[in-house]
Length: 93
Image (cartoon, rainbow, N blue to C red; front, side):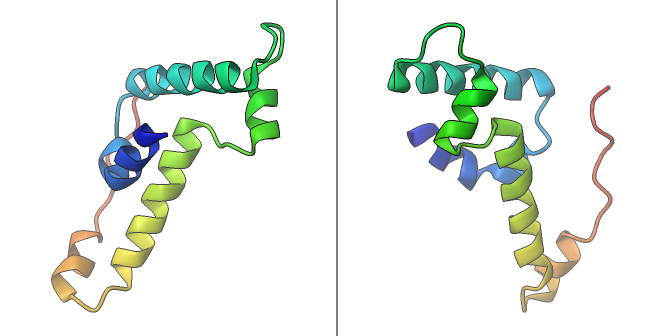
């Protein structure tokens, strides 16, 4: 999926996206999964994701963002290390 590569590149930004935006992307991913597997309408999305070994969009973004900041935290450049040493904003209610 080409959407996944763009999201991976921009994962630090998408990690703080509104839940509504991530939900819209999740709906698109669910539709692609259902179409690709030709799953019956009564099969739950969680079952599709489990069988395809595909994380949800929010889980994927959270993991990708965590990896990015873990790598940046141990980078030899002091400015980059200082940039990641901040308190993230509070999540949306």
